[in-house]
Length: 197
Image (cartoon, rainbow, N blue to C red):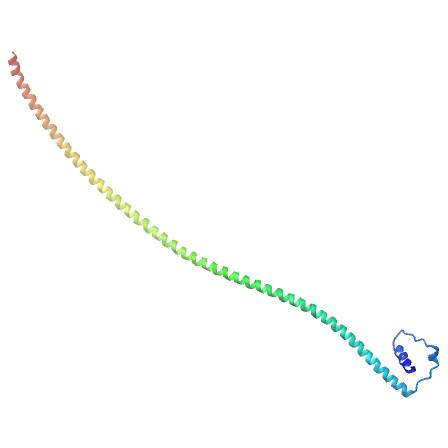
C-alpha cells in the first residue's frame, strides 16, 4: 500500500497546480529502498505511458468520430451536389435535344420556304407568259373583229349601195311609168271632153 501511495504521490507531483497534503500516517512511512524505487519508477513510467496512450487513443477516437461525422456530412453534400449535377446535365441534354429539334424544324422550314420561293417564281413566270399570250390573243382577236367589222361594213355598204341603186332605178321606172300614165290620161282627156261636148 505504501508503494501505491508513493506512485500516486509521484503522479500527482507531476501535475502542475496540485498540492499534495500528507496525512499523519504517511509521514511515518519509511522511505522505500532504491531498488524498489527504480521498479516503482519504471511502473510509474509505464503507467504514465499507458495513461498517455489511453488519452491519445481516446483523443484519436474522439477525433475519428468527429472526422467520421464530418465525412458523413461532406458525403451528404457531395451526394446532393451529384444529384444536382445529374439534374442539370439532364436539363442540358433536354435543352440540347430541343435545340437540335428546333434547328431541324428551322432547316425544314427554310427548305420549304426555298421550294415555295422557286414555285412562286415559276408561277410568276407562267403568269407573265399567260398575260403575254392573252395580250397577243386579244390583239389578234381585236384585229379579227376589226377586219370582220370592216368586211361587214363594206358588205353592208355595198348592199345599201345596191339597194340605193335599185331604189333609184325603181324610182326612175316608177316616174317613167307615172309619166306615161299621165300622158295617156292627158291625151284621153280631150277625147273625153270632146265626148262630153
